[in-house]
Image 1 (cartoon, rainbow, N blue to C red):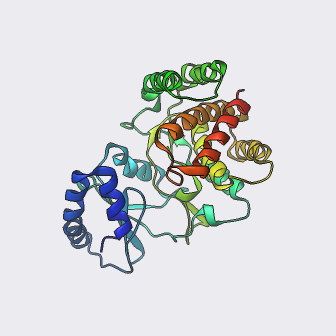
Image 2: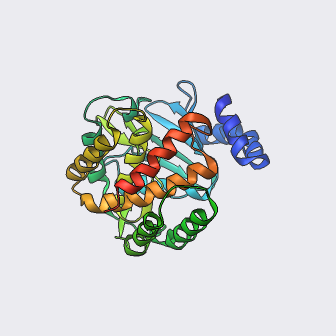
Image 3: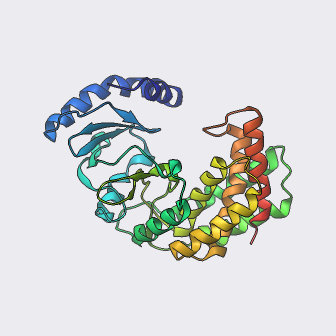
Length: 299
């Protein structure tokens, strides 16, 4: 039942705790199938932290118990199927949900109007935040501390004024953010082809914060996907403007968040690598792109 790649990734990431959870997972799934009167209807799939079991007209999703997964059902519940898959049932104690079934095709695999599709969907997801969700503003102190630590400890070419500009974004945008529900991990892999609507969002983090932040996550993924393309900086600048126009957001606000995101990514890549590039020439190219965008996107 448990995909081998998902099991390996969970153990590699979580160690003995992940191994123990995987041992319990088949029993958890069986209990939930009985609780919600479902039968499996296809092979299990998975993301980074959750396994998805298809059932008739729905999917059962069970995620590894981690603080980052707590508020996913809250976001789905608040959206009520508007721009995202519908939530049918939830079992918070077991980090489980019964969700509307979508297709495995992601927006990453789509070739036309990707930015417009994402921008329109993002605009629809932007609603007043319900009570009880975590504030992104609460991360501002940690962002600032990490930026200063990385800038001092890592070998990098970013001039001090670039890091100072990122710290200014934390102070000026990060500490006082709107009371808006945002996805928190808005990128093309988390937008799926569906039947009820052409595209629906999945896998939200459920934060309260600045909608322009979500745009930067989307742009970073677009940068990684197009790595090596001709005139990539100009292309990404065009996509930033197009996303802002479609999502009805301030492009300069997106640009400032994107600058912070690229400085953080440049440092993160040097310390940890990235999911698709842990070492080697591809990692070097993506870090170099992050460095270039960090300078280019200073507003």
